[in-house]
Length: 183
Figure 1 (cartoon, rainbow, N blue to C red):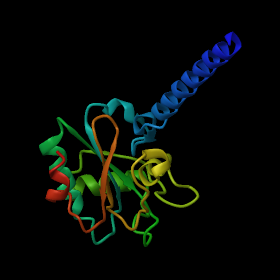
Figure 2 (tube, one colour):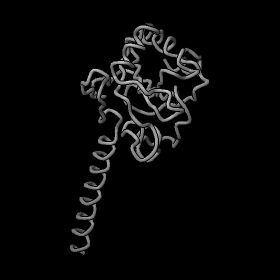
Figure 3 (cartoon, one colour):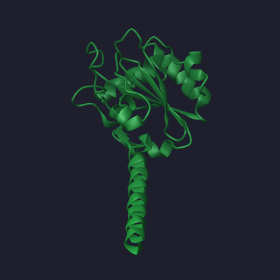
Figure 4 (cartoon, one colour):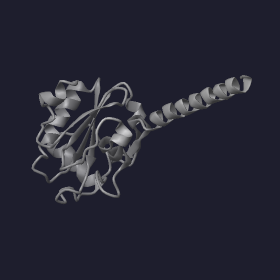
C-alpha cells in the first residue's frame, strides 16, 4: 500500500512538472515573445507593447488598397494610448512592394504621413514566412484560428495580453466598426 502511495505521489509530481512546462511553453508561444526589424534597422521586441492592443497589417506601396495607410495613420493618432499599429511591407502579392526600406519609408511618410512602426520587407506566407505571421496565421501558435493571408492590407488584432482577437481581409477599412468596436 505504501508503494502505491509513493507511486501516486510521484505521478502527481510528474503531472505538476508537465503542467508547469505547458505553461512555460504557452508563454514562450505568446506573440509578445517575437520581434521584428524595423525599416530603420532597429530590432523591435513585441513585449514592449504589453498592455496595448496590436494591429498587424501587411502593406504595399503599389496596391489598390494602399490608400488604407491614411486610415491606419488616423487609427494610430486616435488610439495611440491603447493601440499599436504595425505595418509589414510584403512583395508577395502582385509584386506591389519592390522598394527598398528607404524607398518604402519615404513613400509612406510623403504620401500618407505614416508615423506608426513599419518592419523591413518580409514574407507573410510560404516557406520564408516571418515568425510573427506564423503565429498570426496558425492555431497551433495563437490558440484561436488558422488563416491564410490572401492579399495586401489584411489585418490581425491581438489584445493587451497578446491574445488573438480576429482578422479582416483587405476590403475591411482600418476605421471599420468591425475593428474599432474592439478598441
